[in-house]
Amino acid sequence: MSIRVFLPLLCLSLVACQSKNPYTEESAPIPPAPPVEHIQSPIYPAAPRDFSSYQSWSWRTPPAGTASISGEELQEMVAGALDQRGLRPAPGGSASGKADVLISAGASKETRVRQTYDDYGYGPHVGVGRYGGGYGSGYGVGTSVPIVRSYEEEVVSVRIEMFDAASGQAVWNNRAEARVSGSRAKQQDAVRQAVERALADYPPR
Image (cartoon, rainbow, N blue to C red; front, side, top):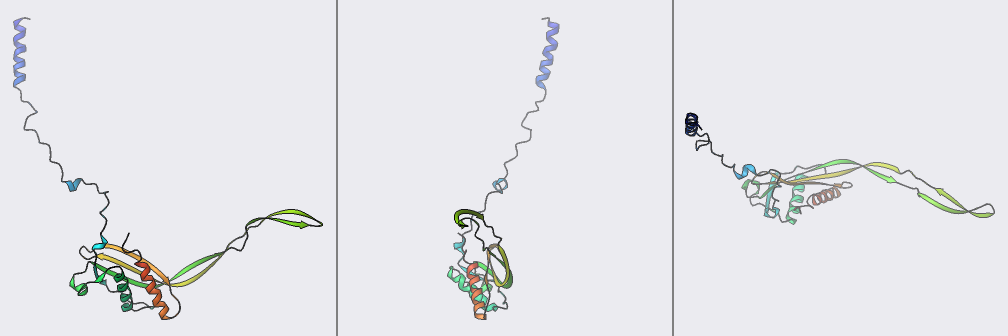
């Protein structure tokens, strides 16, 4: 190769080596990883609530009475049912701030429409009988249409709700009802039965 050709190529190589390298320490650093709480998936289920930690209760709103029962009687029934499930009234009531859970309860008298189905048919059948002077076999199919009867009945509906006293969050609720009829004493028994049914599933299993 001629020296006249080699010298220009050598100069170009030296200029290229002295040019600024774009990939230097001045480049932007990799951003830090986000905090753990920001990348946790929201689809994870919440930890199960420990209902055994609830030992005391007080009224969030004392229940009012109905035509079947007074507010004081309903309070007494709910308190008795809670006591059977290990919940004791907080010392000093709701004003003390010592309760683990706050209770809200209510009762109402309502009308329900019930239906019954009466079916007097015998369905498909095969019969053997006598025809004329001899014997023979006869076959028949019987069908029936059920009779629907509707009627109304009075029920008392009781709803009970529980709220965590520290957070104010609703933690449990249930509703149950019982048929009301007869004297006031029987109506009170129906309310007591509805209260027991409402709390039958507490604590949740």
